[in-house]
Image 1 (cartoon, rainbow, N blue to C red):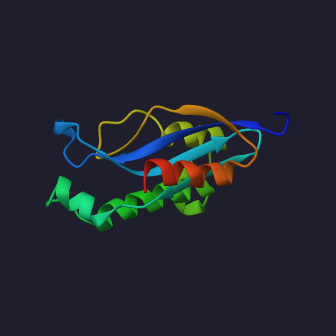
Image 2: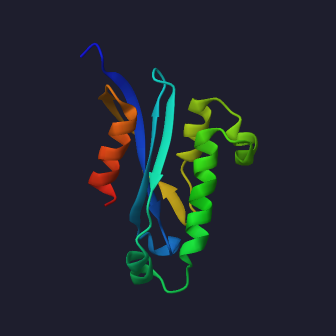
Image 3: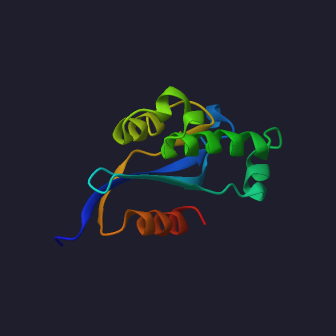
Length: 127
């Protein structure tokens, strides 16, 4: 237990028609303060997207999520938010929104390796 560190994660969702509140999971964002880790992993299934809405384009969502990835990585292209502390970036990305890309509430966990935990959660809730 001594080698395990706390982390928080949220599931990223696509909500094609916000007024209907229907969504499907497309990714995971995970933050571990002690391990100084902030990571994101996403994949949008084009068939699911078409089933939810014929009006929305896959490229638009991929571009938005790539911007989230730049923010996670602290890249200059991530803008002012990308230059914030890891915890602030995580809180900004997981803040409650009423847009077509949303995240779940955050959930806690313990892990020795946040990167492998990100992969496990992604396989469990997205793929």
